[in-house]
Length: 194
Length: 186
Image (cartoon, rainbow over the protein chains, first blue to last red):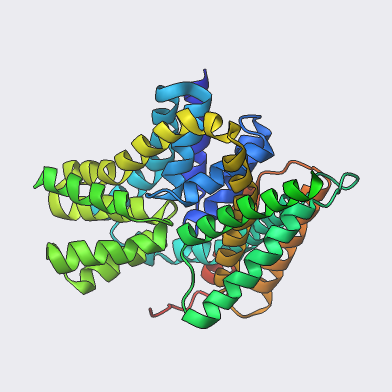
């Protein structure tokens, strides 16, 4: 029953998502890869789309994965799943447990979770970066030169722009810049081969 | 009023890119400055609750604000408001993405985007790293979880990071609530 599976997996993701949208990316990656719902490459595409479309990243990924796996009802099931834990917890706090966020055990839990979440985000980011430049396993590391060049140019432009404007580039601009570099660099490499 | 809640949050969902924190600025502008539904202090209180509970911050804020304005019905409509635009947009994209990717240039663009998204995740992670508490145990927790996650990934061991989160939470409860029972003043 794919709808129930989608609902339950995304319910779990919504429940254990601490530290904003980026905190749930490690969980989403684990879930979709271990369930065989998406390949590593599809997961990258998904991230690119979800970071550059409006709305909460969590809802975007849930809708997308749900739709790929189970059509329109799949997307609704996954989205409901990811939203419901937040909705219920907040309702509970707003209506009944007004002081939950001041409870010392609750606060202790949240404080203890924080360094874990940061570690999860950074380790996921590092592995994604390695995979982006061609890492596929300890014995299969063929460096993807095109991606390496894109990455080097991207970092150069990003830091130049950040220094000049003294402003961080937004997520959408980062995606657009990297997309543009992807097209240009790939075309140059293609032209050189011919 | 209920419909207004829905449409206000739909607008917020439709016009904020980049998730969570970008949304807070947008919510402040619309809800506090334009609609005057609440003052800055109330908003701050809601942000604190939204940040210290699990789940996407935008959803948490919409639910809380909807409830404050119009009870349970309000919270349902405000939450739906944030969700529906994303749901529709991403559903439509999911129908066409595979076809788009057959196009050579779109595929090239996504080659670049791979690097871009990895960078975004690392940027968010380093931003949060600066806020990790000083002290041996938070740093040790960070180091151990980071090292184990990388190791598991390299060796293709599957281990759900939910367990790391729960362990961190238990350590937190023991450390900050059981062992140091002195009352904390916020």
